[in-house]
Amino acid sequence: MFDMAYGNLEYKRRWSNYIYSFKHHIIFDKKNLKQLIISHFEALIIHTKNILKKYDIDKYIEKFKNKANKETKYIELPNHIIETEFDFDIIFFSEINILKNEILEILVCNFLYSSKENIKNIKLMKNENNKEILILGETAKCKIIFDKYLDLNI
Image (cartoon, rainbow, N blue to C red; front, side):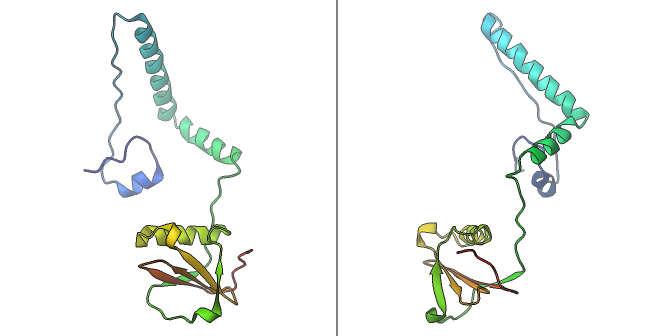
């Protein structure tokens, strides 16, 4: 069993084969007036949230938040192929800054995750026509080939 913690998120529903209800337990000292008040207030908040979830109001609130927050956006990666076994001639490539482009940032993060490299050891290089990007680490490397010119803005 792998517990993905509290929260009804899409990736948790996709990865799970068993979903269970989350239970709240509030423990407090009945003799302490301050703890009594705080615990009843906390119980009221939890009860209110559960009622809102029961009527799917939390989904409407989430949609409203996403519309209100313009910074949240999905970046679609252009069509590309990733090769891990390749030869290259360094004279046809020039070094570029790793974090100058959102697309490159995503690709570098994916490479770092899969190769267990440290970002300090990464070199990012591009060829003249911006169709090939090399990500070179200490122990791993990959070549990303785009099917058309990629405007890198760098």
